[in-house]
Length: 277
Image (cartoon, rainbow, N blue to C red; front, side):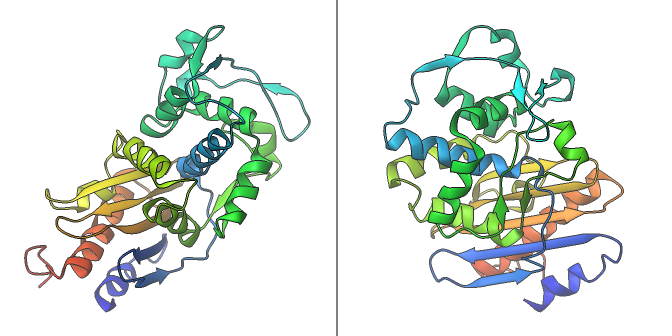
């Protein structure tokens, strides 16, 4: 897609990676798709997938309440750390510390509201090793989960999660193709992703007749968004856009939205209505 590559060429001091796959045709578009990034919260989709994987095998129950705690073990030295609610996008679960909540609700809060507390609870439950093993089983490359959010000692030592745009695209493709445990569980996970409350990226670049099931991730240097897009009247496609180095968060949002707009026009053949002619 020359128009997209021309658009991306304007970013001299920023990095933008794109991975697209049309699940109906298998057509792909890859730009810097194997360049590793700090994934921010995008890796939470891999955590969700392993939770459902273990539920399907009877290792745990999605509807059984589990303890809500805020004490986790650093992978750097085994010391305990806690998540600061002031740095968390979701705060409702903190009121239940010392009590219980179901895994299904904890997963929903992790994805739809990007809760860091919920993420650490789930990683402690299912383990990073099993998450990575399942990703390998699914044939997903370029996504590795080492730890939960706010393990600051590990972060200082460079012990970080990583992801590529290709790897994130493969995560969504596996869901869209019904290959994660079962089609029923894939549909449930996609429904959770439809409820994402941070919609500055991919959804902003779509026309009103298209739906998206997606997950964002961001910090001071990075902004990413990836998901499944459902155009009206056709099957979905998987799209991942990862960015680094934008001085202003809103500029990163605008970039992801514009990439989405151009990809969607390519898929639907609607360049005129999307304003690209």
